[in-house]
Image (cartoon, rainbow, N blue to C red; front, top):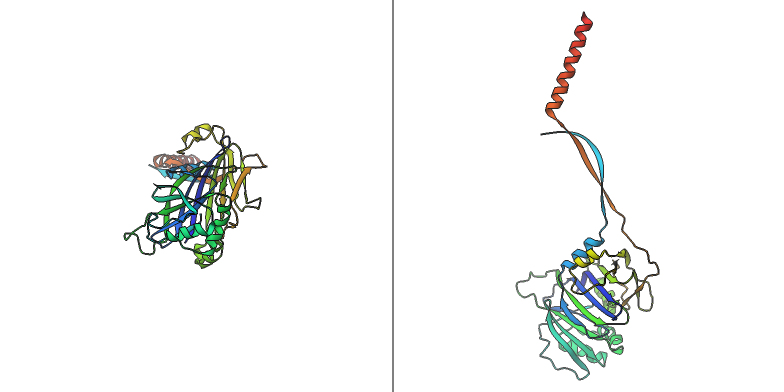
Length: 328
């Protein structure tokens, strides 16, 4: 399994230290039943989000199109994701050191928020609920368990017998996670085998991967991995958003007037996901705009055919008259 395309919106409410994290993804998989895990510093509130908000943000940050008139003559005119089995999340024995803090059905997922005292115990709980066990998963869980973070396990409803055999792409619905945090972040860290074994097993034509992050907050921001390691994401757009356009965005959460939007694009594959991605105010406070797209707009000047005929006959008449006068 692999994430082919991923987009996220982060709305950062600085006074309340609250992050609204909205994510959607397209997976490459032939599995009928799968899911993914998302770590957060606190118990998240979950909600479904209309994909139209991503379309609206892409429209906002796209380059301006400039039509350049050009004369062209005349013309006649008339998160870490894991394979699951078919077992229900409610029919396995719960380990004493793993606690289910919340569970709900949202946006086509069965979502369970987990808290654990021990990474191997949490890995065992996931195995009992048919997540694929492996040492790299336990290693991935360990720092989150140590920091007392919560793990939300999302499981997509099985596609069933009606799904095409070996269907390669699955578009997952957008989900909102709202939680308290000291620093806004994107869950960028992945198990080591996702960067090595899984990536190497993919055909060369399927290794491309893209991540788009839209960050709405009080200022332009930059991203860094973990304690400050460089992130390969590039800033493609940054500016304060016009209040009218901001109010028109179909966001399920409030965004303060005067908010800045910073849009990033990360096409690294494999992703350097050794830690999570954290955002902070950028040292460069200026706006970023993509260069405009200039398109030649050819035009022709229309000339009526009867006018051409009239001018031609008139010219012939003048020429004939001159010849007669010269003959005299």
